[in-house]
Image 1 (cartoon, rainbow, N blue to C red):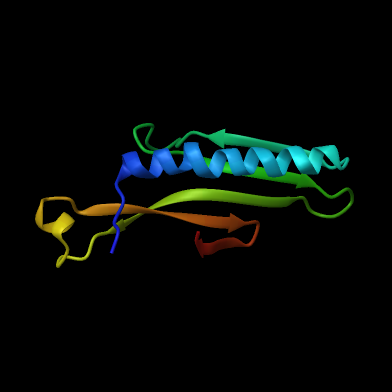
Image 2: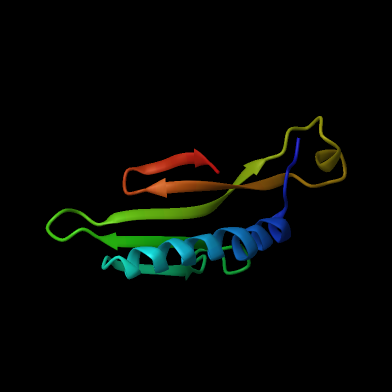
Length: 104
């Protein structure tokens, strides 16, 4: 029953997700893979968190893409957070080339 706000979501991206993605990118690069990771700002609303993206080149095949996107959702009305005037929360979701893979 945790409905994290924007601050908590940004902190999670910075302190947990980004270091993990950097470590994976480093290990792949050390193994000879063509790797690029980046933090991408939210182009539609600069006040909201952006997303993390990892791309691994696979030669003649399509690149492998792994992304972590904050997604905004409505808070259920029965929660304390909703009753205190907050109407939305964020979930971090993984995306591949095929689309959303759900929450992490």
